[in-house]
Length: 149
Ligand code: FES
Image (cartoon, rainbow, N blue to C red):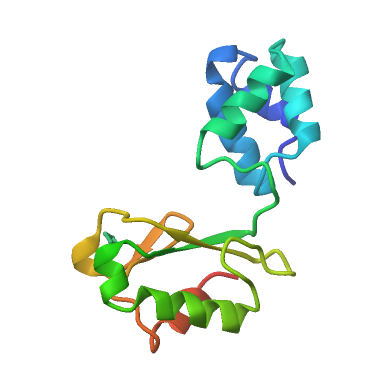
């Protein structure tokens, strides 16, 4: 059963200094930060909603809109681009029936393009959640994705 927002805040002893960790834990559990969760954090930490919102908007790993259970990030930096990253994005859009930047209807995947993830020698690179997959191509991308359900 998922932790409630209150349980997560309590885990950090309701300390304001842990607000980023608290928001990350909520994001991990709910795959994004619903407004109601931000309001609860604001109340429990006694931090103004504007400040909670500012933190939630600042960090790229935090999302204010619903995301899929798994986030697929295709690197389209220069090194990956010249090795065919755009074709991988196109294929994933077709196969998953989702546009880049969007989440599949079943909320299983969010598909994103990202710039260099620092693994250029392994390009094209696809990062799924925290896993980095190198040398991805049109033939093996299905195998990479099917591990995530
Ligand atoms: S350009 Fe893709 S990892 Fe650097």
